[in-house]
Image (cartoon, rainbow, N blue to C red; front, side, top):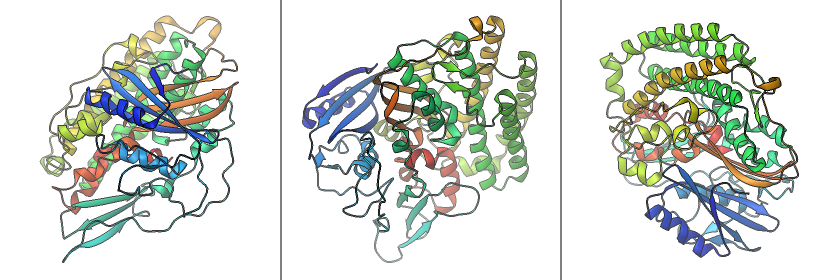
Length: 499
């Protein structure tokens, strides 16, 4: 069962042609996923047009070694093709080689093939260094990471520079690969939520919503209305915490010590509020298949009062920060992404909205209780630099506070669901579907396949994975000292990229 408009092609050539035709007609390329079906492999392309999803599939016969590349006409497909090569060993037609991305394996090593339900034996990794692209007098290569100062995730940036400019930047994210997609196989749909929450820790709620949304579409069930309000409450608190983290990283890079302390305090207050509501700072255990595990552990009046206090102090500090010329100068004109780039790559979240591309699946493709709570999306900005992306996030923080208040007020008005049943039980379902959510980083897509209540394939696609392909494109007009600001402005999660 696929809830979106879906067609199946018996050949990879018509499949690729259909995907390209959708993009030429104005659809946004949203992802390319793969799943083992015994000795065969199914490819699934997802596109978004006017808020609706379009799905194209093809099933590659046993022994297939390659399929037509989408990259020449769809630049963002390149990263998906690299990931599929790592996990399935499928190359693409064309003259260029696919560099390893999430799992660099030595030649002859068995591929994981998620969906095959076959345990992966011990693998041998390929230690070959990332490919360098520049040469000439005065050019040098600097490996930045995977271990560096601060508490950042393990990622290696291969910086090639003739001095200050960064005309070439390569990345290696495989240090963070945990094999999560294989770990889903054989779990019950209920236990799958526990793993979905941990796929990308900074977006635990968003991933749980996307996963549960897919299962609920397979089961054709509707969650209790009150559970939708609770889902919005926790999702928006997660958004506020993540957006504050980008501010913290920006002010730290700019040497704004007071602002660093103040915004760190605001984030900590939000995280503690989340813990008081559900017992955990990341909201894990709240979202379950069919609804939520229970109501907030605070009264509406106390919660609203706490929100008012946090927002008032945060607004005062934000006004001071955004009126500080020395801070604004470091972000203005830094890491510019043109509207053409974000359109060609189908950018997501604040990265897209900072360059004028307006799409937010909370409102374009409503889930939870967003359709009932009304439109909370603000205007996109067009400058395309780190400052524009930061302003988008600050606007979204304001919008998130408003959505939380409406959700709490609605929940308080309606009270608990009948018989205090906060979730609808799910039986032993079978089928497949896509689920989605708008994480702080942008749209998450999760493809779920289940047979008799047991997961056979779960493929989460994080916004970080999709957006990171554009990261090197933000550097040609910037210098090495801009690196920290551009990285923070993307709001990336490497765990969500490496899987």
